[in-house]
Image 1: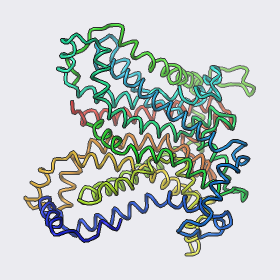
Image 2: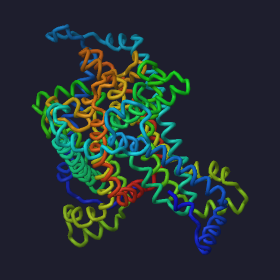
Image 3: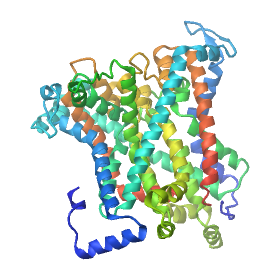
Length: 303
Length: 294
């Protein structure tokens, strides 16, 4: 944060002034921009930071507000207790099993959605066949049929198919994706027809074209969608709430909800905070480490 | 426009579509049709027999003051969340577009909430504003403000709106930044040379050129506020206090799963479906027209 206002070398300052002048942005308004951004960062990052701070304090400290702004000295105690000792509090299930369940669900959904959507978009863009637009709309309309508007009957289907408390049940129904299909379709539409023509002249069939040309071209889009869908899977709430009854099939978000009771003084807040941090850390890591692809892919998918 | 050149295969495209269509058929269309079917039936209390009742379920649902309350809550909630999340994100994106140094840093710092589950976002905000132990609740109270979102409906609503909007800022920010980068700098320079100030340039050049992205985000944010925020409501307020934060989606879940009123829940599902279909169709039509890069 500090380096943004640190003094610059003369050349840099001149460069900035020049560019600023070109765009008619004064130095003052640039400083204001920095100030607003810093404020924005604080507002956006603070809740997570504060959760982390709370996860390093004892229950007694948390229950006596205001909570200090700096981390306390219970980091190791709390995290150790949550990871290895706090089993009973999440319905007899260890945190690592919850993290494993959530990982399986998120990965399954992300990979499944990408495979299914790429195939669908490939069919819709690069083939002409009766019912093409009909099928496109069939997929598109699912965008308007989220779980919430068909909740009971979907639950019944899950029960009838014996998918309650299974990984298949957590993953399969969420693999359909209008969004991903639309994004791939949009991207495929920008691929010049000459490329298809060239492939056909060279005697490449659709499968070869798909494997050797389309997939390599789609790498960034796939990476971007992977990040988005992994997070989508990781942060699911209603679905795991419905299709898991057994505590050992819970995702970490659902387990966390079960740990908390706001009216009740028994909630082990320090452990809740540790679990919250553990629950948000993996997807945050994915966003941060795949940030480049993520943002680049998003921009490109939008074109 | 689609490429004019395509592959001649006749069977293959169907095979490619099959996985998606099977899933969509079994888990989307079949249940949705069941919801439609059940919405015109009434089950006896033991679930043994059901009779055709026409639109009676709809009539009852639409005359239920609790339902109308949920409609109102949903409207307030969605508008507030979409507006707040998009306005803040746009402001930050425009600021990020102005500066030269530190862009990457700000972006990194602004995108993490994207990865936080809505339910956890809600719990975190409630933790900060919980009347018994929340630090901010403590500060509000010591300054004489009667803050208690667990008892006061307005405050509970405010809390879930802020939590829901907070989580969505990152997403909108990224898209607005991308949109701003796509605007040719020459246009802005030309306007600057013509003497247009920063504010004027924003409203006459930048904002109109962002329209496609803004509409796209409007669709996403509305859908998000309608559906993805179920976790926030369920985890934080449970629709309370006194149904003050009960949204349509929460009510469908609650009536179907907790109260087990099949017909009413199905009728609510159908109404919700109609709302979403209408909303998305209108917005997408507009977006399709505006955003055809072809």
